[in-house]
Length: 419
Image (cartoon, rainbow, N blue to C red; front, side):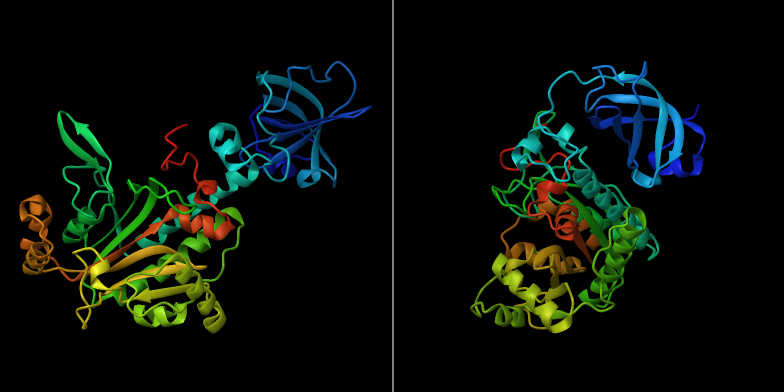
């Protein structure tokens, strides 16, 4: 008999079916036992009357079972049906105490214990839901960009030199010579603009920052895009806004979770204005977390938006490839804040070879280290720009998680490299 999922049971009322999954909870009452079985789609309730089919002690919480039973209507059961007269086969028995219970509405274990026992904690519906939302966001990202003529690419995660942002890289032995884990696909996605004009990538990036905070990871998933033939950074922001709208729609479609509306035009404020709104000194070179929170509150209060773009960051705080604005002290770069947290960094890039030579020389960087990258501009590159979204950050903000590790399956940070 073909196995069906819990969400399909209502279509089989009165019929005998086979389900399979994990024992989520076993409630042994005086005259009857209830077995709650969890599968990928949800929960099924199995009623076990006294008799030869009464579960053996081997049926413990966490055990994997296959059950053939009759689908019977019951408004109190999950989905309005339950399974009666079951024949139970144990596929895998759990014979050790669980570190924590999964049938509670919320995990009682602290985050450290959950991460230590990730194989179990991720089975809890709340943790699994977060990962489903992340998967839906990624699918929406792909679909929204493909609809805008972007082409998906894959770029190397092992690179020859630590060229993008200094020392915050992981070094490795690459067949006897030094190599590094890539901090982003930035250089490669720019080069691929010369091939497809519009490209995107979903992949891991690695940051060896000694930051032990609730929003930093040493490895996270970056949703990157780059697009050619733009006028300036505002074209990039328009494409990003459209992409976020598609991502959020896909989340609702796939999971039922309803994110906040993405405005057709997200409010934007120049960096100098952002400092005034946040009450920061005019010579502040960057936005601190407290400033970002103040801007989020301002955007919600003044514009009814949970999003706000901050544009025109100082050039001295942006990478060498960033295109300056009309005022050369400021850039055509931007951040997107969501509920008071930066979730996207983007902007317009330089596109002329001579400008790159000048920028790298001014920074004291050797041109030889950037030879392969500079070739793309030597051979002609259109005005272009792009962005990078931190997947874990945006999902954490969506679901109200206090720590990005709550929405990451197996996080890597300053102290954690296992499991």
